[in-house]
Image 1 (cartoon, each protein chain N blue to C red):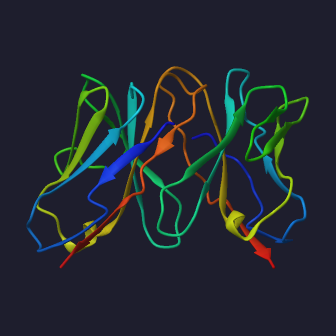
Image 2: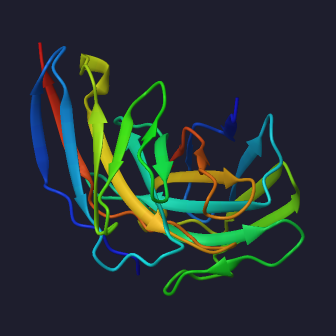
Length: 116
Length: 110
């Protein structure tokens, strides 16, 4: 149980393109979803936290107009990287949780984004 | 930020127990202790979490110190598939986020 599906698993696109990444909780309701970014040989960096039906809360230094997050249902959140540039190339990972931090987070398998 | 301290790396032999330590001296009374692990090019995988009492599940055991300022993740019999980066994290509250540190890289020798 507690499966989180993230799609696509990898994407290569030209600079200036916008890219949408989907995160779905398949067998539970995700009251809260998180988006992380991970550069090679580094730890996960939290980008934003989103609660279903509410605006996302972004971490300091993360541009909300650059990284658009939508959490319209209890099973789906999307991250759109707008006008992507090579410096946005990274490994993006979502996670979902049903309840507070007394509950575990379940992670997707990540999306490898490469901007040419 | 909720910070934990872990050794950078640890080596173990296959089929032997592994004890991964973590210090979290700034933990509050309502913070849960979580452990996740990550294989290369994959998202993290939930391992175990607890508040005060020791916890056991099919993957591991979590031993929490009485003062809750430290904990130990125990893998009872390490396998090659257990080689990963293990993250110890704590957080509390309804909307609390989990902040990942550098984790500990576990290597398992055949």
